[in-house]
Image (cartoon, rainbow, N blue to C red; front, top):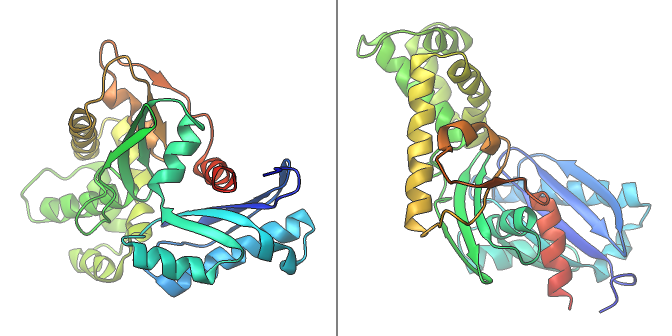
Length: 287
């Protein structure tokens, strides 16, 4: 298939926001919109994806009807079954394959064919390993049961620690005092926030935790260390070898590097973003 004639669509949908890109022999335009975690809010996520696509088409100077012939790949958070993927694909323009967001994160970080481990840590998280074209991954099952080390997990863990501090079960620190004040000053305010909070809402607290950890706050450092321990377990489970590079991606991934440094471990800069990965897979799907 001729890349210079075919229109390709890449979609990256996460718990904080989504992005779209259009390619025809080169990048034509990009667009962004709100969250697109389909488990959290299927219809709202699809609406945001369509908004991002429309923004990309506007940036590219393309009419809406041009998208009907596009070949696309959408990597979306919260896609837990083939039925959900098929349901989402029917709502998107052109011929668009829908998968969970692991595939595009790995393709974006490693490029089309390189081997290595990808630690994708944003609002959610997962750890993947590609070796000889075969991909294995762990985690990424959503904040209710998984997503360790992620922004959502960090924020929730910090609030749980703050409640323990209020109860006298752990020392109060600058972080716990700041979180208590931010959410209203009383433990009941934290409980009220958590009752309706989505992963992205918990994730808004993660920068405070990471900054506090860098400043030496004991509670924050403990949370980050717990996240790093899980990431180490994930690498061990996947059989990661010392000679295989580790790619830290997502908004929080690079912030874990110091906690993951080990003698002989090799870190590498991602070749691209998950959105780049979506375009790689879209173009592979059109061959």
